Structure formats: structure tokens, C-alpha cells
Length: 117
View: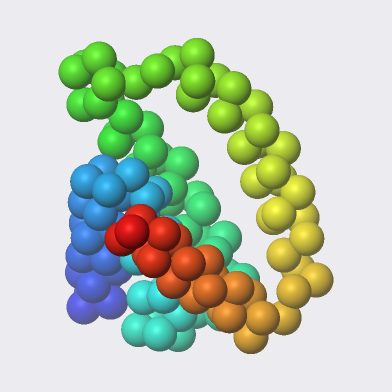
């Protein structure tokens, strides 16, 4: 029961961060699933991806209601994103968990630095 409560709490924090910052929640979920819950790197990424789909639908609702969604731009980004996401997920099995974690950390650090400037 405690584990379920902790996982729901993770979802709450990740969903809040995703809705507030537009990050999809994976930035929060993947490290916590690996470090706190002992998931393998690949399983954490896969689990996070499933959750992000539903969370993104929930997060877009208030933005859409406030007229803060550019559907034309979102549609074009979605076209590329669908292909890129499938390609990335198809290749992930060839990447070792260690290198996957390093790439995730590197991307997070670079994005953080770029956004802070």
C-alpha cells in the first residue's frame, strides 16, 4: 500500500511539474523511478512515456480553454515528434542503461543551463 501511495505522489509531482513547466513530467519521473523505486533505466523510460501521454492530455485542457495553444504549430511539431519518438524508442534497446542515464542527465543539464541564460 505504501508503495502505491508513493507512486501516486510521484505522479502528482510529475504531473504538476509537467503542467506548470511544460516538461511532460519525465524529467521528474525517470530519475525517481530509477533511484527511489529501483526500476531499470529502460523500464523507467517506457513507464514514463505511457504516463506522459495521459498527463499531456490533462495539461493541455486549461491551456486550450485559455486560448494558449497554437494548433497549427502544434500539428507540425506533432508530425515530427511522432516519427522522432518512434525512432528513439526503437533504438533505445541498443543503448546500455548506463549510457541512457548519462544521456538523460546530459540533456537535462544542457537544457537547464540554456533556459537559465
